[in-house]
Image 1 (cartoon, rainbow, N blue to C red):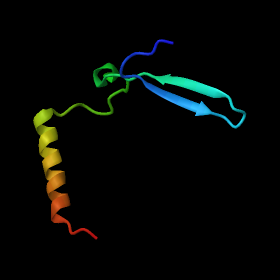
Image 2: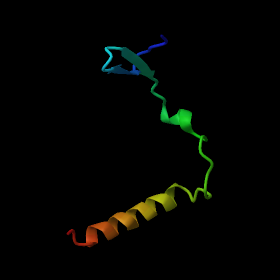
Image 3: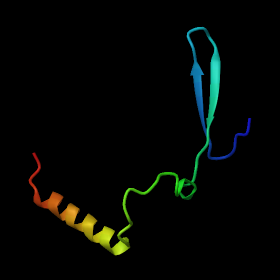
Length: 65
């Protein structure tokens, strides 16, 4: 059945008393690299950190409702 440590198992029992088993493979994030095409150029780690900081700062300044 190709079940390995870290895989998830999904069981389903139908109203007709039929049991089904699915094996859901876990994938490493690094395995997904390149699966989606980039929509823009990567600006660099420092630019991303600055943008996240600005966004978080704005959220902290705004009053919550």
